[in-house]
Length: 81
Image (cartoon, rainbow, N blue to C red; front, side, top):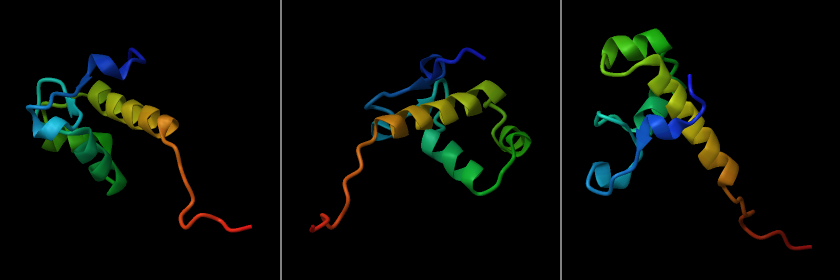
């Protein structure tokens, strides 16, 4: 698979309020992450969502990884020294 998730993930403010989705579907990256987190296998995902391909699932994982790499974390409440 090409390592660029941009080939398979799109963000359009007119679709799902701008949530990232798998191109050509109404399936959000969020949904893919949620069902993976709930223990679904790649085969189960593709069986239940036949419009998805293995590369779509990989792209969703790569997108989520890139988003987390860019995330800034701030302790709350602020630490008092």
